[in-house]
Length: 102
Image (cartoon, rainbow, N blue to C red; front, side, top):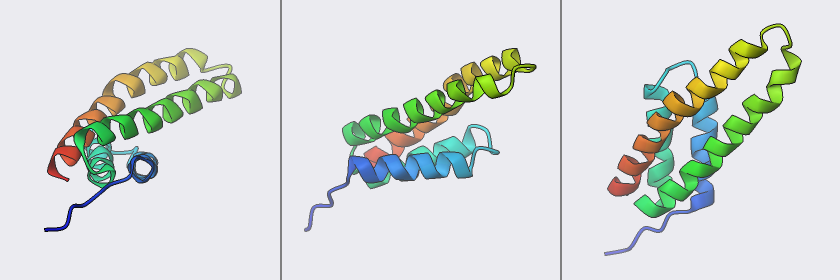
């Protein structure tokens, strides 16, 4: 029986790519991205580590976009909070499930 080994970096890139690609599907899209990234990471611990990388990248990206929208800054600030809570929750749950099934 051969042992599959995953990669945190591979899980990170899959989570990041699919998070951006499926951003229009709330929670479910992020769950799918986390699930695929978790399977690519190869385990629960690796999946959790890989989860934090795209979560931080996407949150920082949104924070840097705020100055480009001065009239709707409060709305963008609210979007950051909602994305951090809702989007990353689905990503985290998907990463754990995908990592457990890897």
